[in-house]
Amino acid sequence: MYVLIVGGGKVGWNLARELIDKGEEVTLIESDRRRYLIIEQELEHAVQYGDATELWVLERAGIQRADLVIAVTGDDEDNMLVCQVAKEKYLVERIIARVNNPRNLQHFKLLGIQPAVSATDLILRLIEHEVPRYGLVHLLALEEERLEIIELEVGSNAPAAGQKVADVQLPEGALIISVLRNGGGFVPKADTVIEAGDEVLLVLDPGLEDHVTPQFTSRG
Amino acid sequence: MFVLIVGAGRVGSALAKAALAAGHEVSVLDEDPLSHERLDVGGDGTWEDRGGLFTVGTALEMDALMEAGIERADTFVAATDGDNTNIVIAQIAQRRFQVDRVLSRVMDPARAAWYREQGLETISPTQHAIDMFRRALDLSEDSA
Picture 1 (cartoon, rainbow over the protein chains, first blue to last red):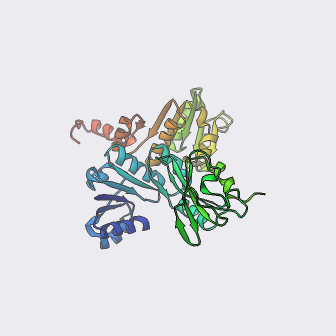
Picture 2: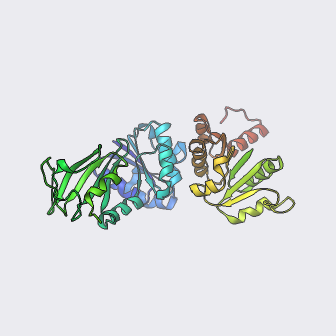
Picture 3: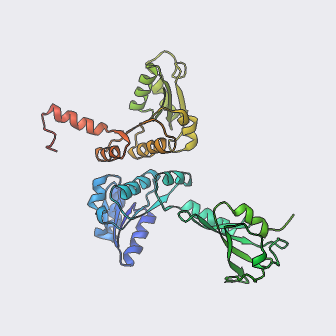
């Protein structure tokens, strides 16, 4: 696989190193001369100097034959446009963009840049996971497939506590896929009884959380 | 006509004044509050006295664009000093807000040309400079 990485910051450099270790062919493009010279000591010919928002720089790096373009500069506009050009002009099959300011995520979506990864967003989700404020954690949103996976802790007198899976009042489009209990997880059957303190994983159609949550949270 | 110009540098401010003088409603957005001075010079009274609008804000922030009136803009001009910012906000104006006429300044001739093919009205001062020098030196178009 030929991977083009744009931006030789901490993310880009480490990514390049890891992918090279895995045996992939990698070219990293860095626009800062001094930074480039430092990286070149280690990566040698796998790093090129230039502004990757300029088409000739991308072409010199062989974007026409790239299987994957990853834009991880510290500038959201640069990341958006590198990916847009990769996808629409050079027909690169797969792109990954880094989002620096989570507020810009909407612009990435508007330009069709997917997936767009925001470290800030990921850390926010980790915080949600470690410190669940509402007892609900968004584990995964599969945007293309229009599905979400969420995790909920079953409250002590929640409606679902003590009920069989088949009897839990769930809306159409929601399904319990896993139960975490005493440090272990299992896939429940229709007659599995949900206990207070269980953590349940559900797969949902987007927007159903508000209908699902009340079944698992304590009343009153 | 309501014209929204992002970037009050030499180009943006001159264009804003010309549009106002031509009787259009003009709103200017720039992240630097001091850029307002450029709009004041050369007229009677301040930019606002003459009927102009000015908003301080970053072009990629939705709130700033809304405050500057993008939702009712008939014409949008992206004239910041960054090509990438201009290309991104021009596409936001076009795709999200369906502004009728969207123009953007793109210094890099290669991308100005490609984005023009994609339906974005780009103006490349660099390309114009190259063409003018060429004509001045009598160099043909294909001796790039």
